[in-house]
Image 1 (tube, rainbow, N blue to C red):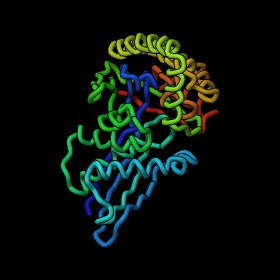
Image 2 (image 1 turned 180 degrees about the vertical axis):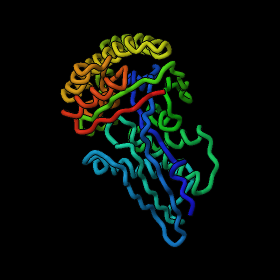
Image 3 (image 1 turned 135 degrees about the vertical axis):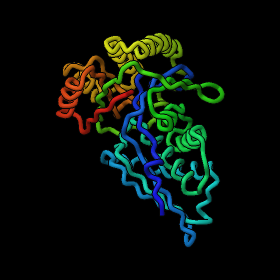
Length: 314
């Protein structure tokens, strides 16, 4: 049987600007990392049901903690693509170099990889937009009402400007003047996006004036961040990442472990650093202007973080 794993990839992502605010239909900027999840799907006419082999290199406890959500997500993708495991068995094997941690978009990379693999196995030709739509359906299993930013990055890769609307989301792929070097690190804490987003929503409803004040600051921030990206102005971009982290602290979605990693990255020479993703655990990222400083920041974070990675946005 021909393997299509190298064509069945979903990329991880890091949010540069927009955690939590993106849910409320304001723009966000996101970059897909080079690491990905891949998938292979095999049908078996002699049996029924779904067999999942998960060979992804996750942080300890992640796959176990997320299994119930993953099962729902897989079922949603199968239903979306009119695949009925009660009629013939389906074996799906997930792998690839992306290490699932909170904040990296692992759930989206998984369901996008699954959608691509199903397209090859059925076979069913699918456009990138159709892959993205299937990924969004799968994301509902993990996040209830996802923003759509993770599955869009997982599908298309690159650096994207993303915005929810009442209809289909708007996204544009950014063309960067120069590649941007990033170091990202895990706190080792797995957090629930559904729970944290729900908590932020509750705080917003309890004190709308407070939330709207933060939203105004963020909208101004993301506009300046997009200009810095477009101009290749990494010094300004770094300062704005720092500002976004401060907003996340005010939003109560950072935590001591994230703040410690952010401070360590700045001390080691990063131009800016912030939490990325859900928060209250998960990931942080640091902007590094040169390969030498990227290595230095990665080394510093490696002394205090369970896992550290390097990537480049281009």
